[in-house]
Image (cartoon, rainbow, N blue to C red; front, side, top):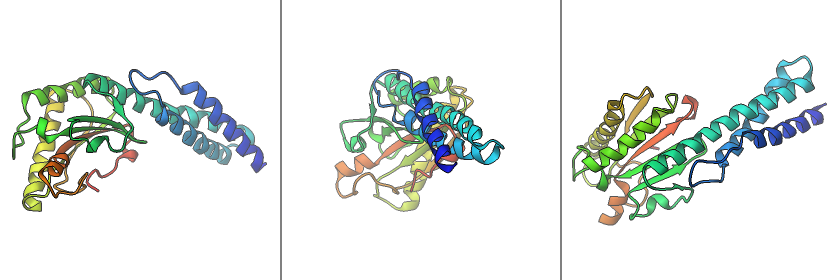
Length: 237
């Protein structure tokens, strides 16, 4: 009986995965979030279905199908949002873990397993030692806000990061002010999304803070897009 349940679970994952995968909007065609979400959803759905149904095999199969649809739907939504944001900001979706370390890239859009991460370099966002968003950067943030109107259920988290020059407390206040300034621009567009703000000071540097070039890489604001509260993580850790 157990072997049959496992077999039906795998069949449901394969069938559901094929059903939910759709063409992405612009630059990325890996569908990694969609496929992973579908598989995880299928397994979870099968376990729940088998545990709650009197007819175990039928419950497992139906649970796998339902779980695949939910998990795959979440994955596809991440794909869709990442591609839409990248296109609006004039860049592509990067799956390269080193993309954020490239000083020539002032904006980087990355898809994670549970979120979309949009990274803005502070050099294109703020004057030195300031939390006043520059006009050109404001326009970029407003483009993200315009897209979020299409995804009112998406949860938004804005985090600010500094280099290690100065005290931790001073940098914490600056990072929080910068993150809040970006969040205020998003809110000014009238979006319905829940928005959370974090100041990370010089926690979680991308590279060591040994040279000015390295410190410039670490100064940034990141916007995270989540589809569920349970997927949220602390960006400062």
